[in-house]
Amino acid sequence: MKTDREAPQASRRKTAIAETGSEKTGSNRPDGRISEMDRAAGFEIGPDFTRFDQINDIFSRAFWDDRVKSADTDAFFDSYRRAPAPRRADGFTQRDFAFRNAAWVISDMVSERGGDRGLREGFQALIEPAVPIALDAAPLGTAAEESRSIKAVAKRFGADLVGIAEIDLRWHYATRVDVRDFSKAPNELPDGMTHVIVMAHEMAPELVATYPSALAGAATGMEYSHEAAIAIQLASYIRHLGYDAVASMNDTALAVPYAIQAGLGEYGRNQMVLTPEYGPRVRFSKVFTSLPLAADAPRRLGLHDYCQSCTRCADSCPPRALPFGGPEEGGDSPSTIRGVRKWSANCEKCFGFWAKLRSDCAICMRVCPFNRSYDRFADRLWRRLATGRWRALARWWAERWAAERRTASDWWKGAGDSNGGGG
Ligand code: SF4
Ligand code: SF4
Image (cartoon, rainbow, N blue to C red; front, side):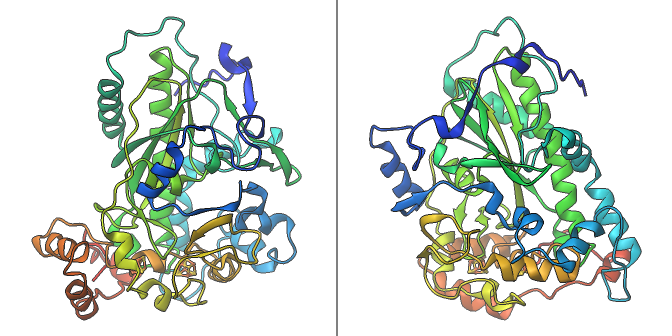
């Protein structure tokens, strides 16, 4: 990978997100299309909507907010670098932590290189471009042709699903975090960005089947490392074509609404995007670009509707952090975005559980009945029933044939297979 960090465009003008559009809503489309698109995406945005300050996400708060920061949260972060927390419990041995931490290492190499400038690339700052923008722009086809070609390139680099959305500043953090002192910093995007390419990265099913375990955390780390490489490669490809592009993981903007807007899936009770291909068992990366592209449309797939009468994720959550009722607006936590009616987790309870485990938890991903591989006819038949008028039958079926959690020691013995952990 080239590391030309002094590329000519490094000095290109950047616009702080808060300078563009309405300060409160970030609306960049005054022509009324937002509400039409919101309806299609299932977004319910109220008049109190306020863009989110990233400093209030639960991971940032664990560094500055005494209501979240504790000896456990400090030990949680330490366990990824200096002090793994091996113990006798299955899935939490030194070997499990070693595998998890090694899986993260490429992502860590990207995210740590700008620390002295307050940038945690991929998490609290855009990923610095690896190559300059070509001086001559390549001749382009139509926007639809370019979108097809971008998706083909992204998939060849390793993305499992790819969708495209127009830039929607509502989902961009009002401010990002300077990680030197955990203060608010301008959340900047280069001028001229018009679209975001959203990529989904499938997590290994046989590792996800072992949540909660440090071993399962390797599935998370591996996809962060994969997505860092894939997003940097895709952004570099576009820059070689002569157009601006920057790679992004969890930084800069919320991936969930963008993934829904790009037609990749629907919002679930477990706060994840439910994709028809993998259910919630994916992670997302993004590439912001000025390349003229055709945006995809949100899709109503029937997965969100299934959640209305399913509570398996909420039932299975050890600290009871997920809601059992319908979508609601607000909540008391600063970590919940204002003015959006949706299912929201109690982030403090959720992350408190992670901190005690010394590893990430995704039980609510593992137990979701949409977490399947869909390579078996029975799984595809179940999805067809679950997303249509036979939903009640699908629920009955899922309740009776829910897959058991697999153990980490089984995985190490070679007993892991490629099936999802759903019912
Ligand atoms: S477990 Fe059930 S309620 Fe939770 S996200 Fe999956 S389908 Fe929706
Ligand atoms: S990640 Fe674990 S603790 Fe958090 S909501 Fe899901 S099941 Fe609950």
